[in-house]
Length: 363
Image (tube, rainbow, N blue to C red):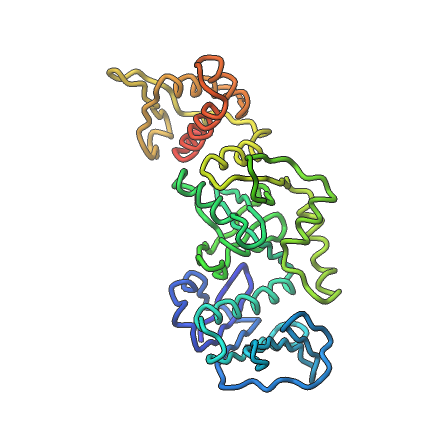
């Protein structure tokens, strides 16, 4: 069975269903020796343990037996539909799976492998956060929320508007030392990249009647992090995670109430980037060619310029302004002062222009 390097975690996965996920896991293949093993197999029956569980939550029963930590999850019939067991260091995880008690077998195995890996990630000092990850240039914005709130939908609005952006992980990215890591365990959409990038901000989103965003104070930020992270059950792992949580609290953390509409991305973008200053990179100038105003690269930039840019009058105005440091607010005000345009339209135009310049490596 193959070994994988996932966020620097070397793991061997042995599964009856691994061939179903071959394309998904391929970018993570490694020839390096594994530290952890996840073994999954299907069986016809799992015997329910009769010992007194150390914990119980609904149909989930937790046991400590023969040096192993064991989770058994019961079907509505009372039978055990799957079991995950591991040693205290999570070096070896064993998943037993009853096919007859699980209707969506392939999806269930993917979920079980994800559960096992995330426990390993916790032990390895990563913070798994329930979020969809927007990769813009070399920075990641995490949109975090419980399932069915709209975090993936919001990221998709960004991706549909700005094709150069990407989804690093659509469900549970890993956070460590100010970086976000992609993994193959990325929810039902299975969107992910085998990469790590610097964390720009975390936005905890809610469904709303209007589009608003604001920075969180520490109390609310802690509450949202604990609500949306994968929480361990043992004190030792908590002790490992608390420094990561404290580090995360130093990052820009926001709360947003959003309508289910494409326009909402301009509000979150403005909130996240409003304090950033920006300026054109050296090596670009404007020239009038025929009836067109063109962005022309000069010097070294002429060797690697990745596309022709033609500017209209408002684009020319913004380009000239960006020869000195600007903010989203200053550019929006400039556009509104020059043209009879509504604030939301000006904001959309400014952000679209900024991202076009970034895509062309002009800004």
